[in-house]
Length: 220
Image 1 (spheres, rainbow, N blue to C red):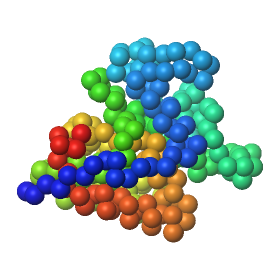
Image 2: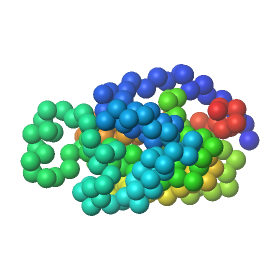
Image 3: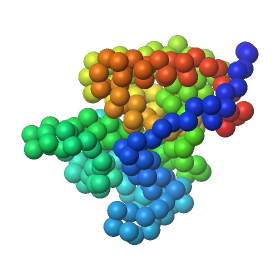
């Protein structure tokens, strides 16, 4: 099979304050750092007790409604930057788009990271969900199944449906040790449900990335 190598620096993701916040959350959990209270904690890959407990709680919350598991708010809501117009609607008790995207991305990250101690599954390189699918698809006999689940994520009619298909895809990435930029993923989830034009832009970029056949060992 012909291999087209793609250097990750060809596309530089522009992280918003929201993306930077998600990046700080998942890096704290995977490789360690300072909590919102200023305490320095060891990450999951170093066997830190704080991160290990957090990852377990977050993983159990995949697919749950926001509010069903209040003990994860420290990692999915605390300090979350949101536009003023979204903050005005918080009194209704209905989750905002930013809250949904953060909850989904961070709990899926925990699902991906749990039991993987030799590496962080979050990368700061420009690896979108489509790019991760390209790596997952390389020399894989289940390409049709991978692409089908990937397409269903993009066209999901509800957030619950999106999470269901994303969970299955993340499980495959976990098995093959494929990493993902979870900050970029969270931003893309936000844009996927921000209107037709924004959603189409995300789908187009994901689609282009997914069509590239990349040898994971050469692209790492």
